[in-house]
Image (cartoon, rainbow, N blue to C red; front, side, top):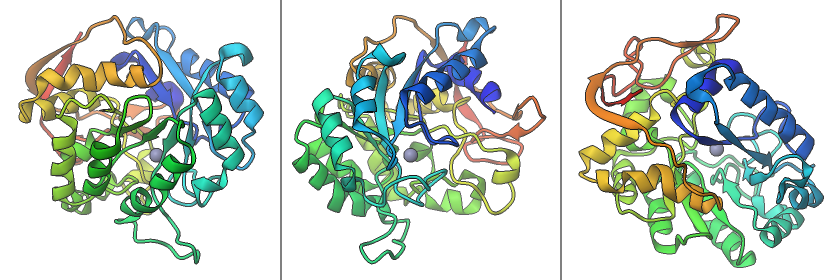
Length: 340
Ligand SMILES: [Zn+2]
């Protein structure tokens, strides 16, 4: 799977945050070094993908040690670690190793605050104090109301990114409390394109946190075009084989890497905000992670096209991206195209 999908991300982007919810989870420097090598090896041999840099992360498991955070803050151990991702136990793909409540990880969070390593949040409350499952349509709103303020108060210098923001409540919170080098949010392209009814008609588009109502989508579309330096692109591209997406039980997560850049451009164009697109795609993210923006350029043209082919692994397993026209996976005609 990695060999099939990594070159696609590398062909579109100079860097990517490599999420750690693999099996087994990435929780040591040695594992991160190994995974980074595998990603780079998967991208070799293609002129378009040379120079691609995967930015490695840790999974906030109960085994993650503060000493690994300290070593990961510099590349002394073999690779820099750019963040630690929190997955609420049971909420999404491979979340079985996560804490039920991020606030339990006290020593790790204190060390991250000390060394300046960002906490990347899958910001959802999945179970309440009594252990009962929370309605997944309000899990993010509950997290933003109950957990995020406690995190900000307990760790006043911790860098936090609320990943794949999906609700109007979270957008309001970020607009009010977001701050460069302190509290940021990332937005996947599919949260700018689809509302709850679109997903209910096309279960293959299911992802976590769940896409919310059209009013939430409209609120997020407004948020991204304000040019705020703490709101930037994060595709949340998650490849699953067609057997897990086109027939039940359907895995959460959508494969967006082949089309995300074009979709963001389409949305910013629709909203008359192309002048803020570069910061959103290429400047604010690197700044959050303490990196210079890439010096390379890409060219996008306004031209309709469709994606109709899957990405295929060496074993012949098919992975269909969002917008696929063969299966009607939403927004089947894409209005902007990346040229080579
Ligand atoms: Zn996530």
